[in-house]
Length: 231
Length: 350
Image (cartoon, rainbow over all chains, first blue to last red; front, side, top):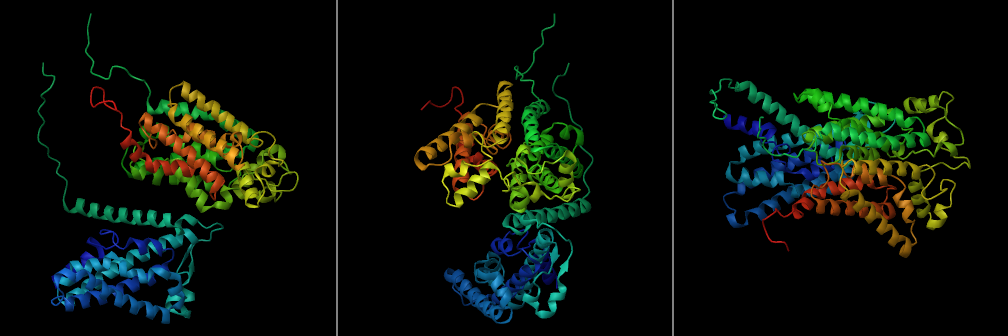
């Protein structure tokens, strides 16, 4: 139980793939211009992560140590191919919107990082749970960043959600703010860097405040002896 | 008689940050006056908006950071940032442009990096680039000088365009920007860029109503005014000669070569149009984000001049001072690393 809890805390907050390990930044920065894109890539990454973690964990005792990385990459690539074909079949609009970034999930360091650091040393069930939590943590950051950028850039949320969720999702589109002029920088790459920086700063702020609450600051100080300018 | 022993340094320059910044802002005055003479009261309105915005933004972020507010605010560095933003945006741009720029410059570019002395990039220019890529339409809507406008705008009209985007008579900025012959006014640099993209030669491009003398009506005098302000800064020893001289010589050299071999626009045009002079004397010389060694300053300035020329002549944007300064800001640590002066008495002269 405690192991599961620790894994959840690690994946979602303490060791978050995007905010703390800063892994997988390429897709993180490139496709988070809208919530829909972010959610699509987040779910794809989550599925690949769970699949690869379980598989790596199952075969961990038969993979020679010297060639483990190529084996892991091939396993991940297989899952990415599956996801890509599924997206091509069922969410074609999103598949086109995400473009090259779906195949690029293979090179997402967050995934191979978990395979190497956790799945290759632990049982399949635990590895699956680790994959779910790490994937959720990554997807959450993607969605938050996507929401920030879409809101500031276009004033909407869930624009184009029908690409991911089907026709009914057009109703999800919310126009929060009506701009005469789009704040383009939020949608352009600089907005992604600024947004991610602010989210990381926010996380650190919460951590610091929590730490300050649990550990009261020591007020007593040793008396200082004056050693200079003595008359 | 009392003989006191003071510790070093014995030779004070008596220059506080506040005094330096006041000097620089004073030196901006001729430029601002000339600009508002040619382009209207909008310049002053934006100046006011920028000063208020930077003060509020700086006070707010200092409050959040638990820093003393007045000592930092009164050093004047934030106000100088505001002044530079105000003079670099089009005089009839909507009011929120200057507010967004000022807040971004102070909060993101300056204070999040640690405040004055820690910012890697020139805050005013980073804000300018943010605005330029976010709102390209508003940021390139320079109107031609007052005397060329088809419909003269009163002071009220100009303020009304800034705050409500049209005058009370319903004239929007697009209509107001029409010049006498019916064409829409553009900055000289913008005009040349457009003309060249339509396969005109440089001399054809320059053959326009806006070009009465060297570098376009109004613009050349704005640049001359900033040059005068800059010379005052040199005289007052607020800035060193290295950066402006290196930048102007490099830009002049590049444009001479371009003029002789490529048939491009001439030297006077490059030196006296756009943001050349304010860039050379007021922006590139920012003591925080510029190079700190004398040799480094020469390299830094020269490369800014080169980049300005390359981007103006071959790039997609009409003017390039902001981009060049930011690009060279990134190179400053490297330049400083390789141009460290020899310590007296240590190491051999090579």
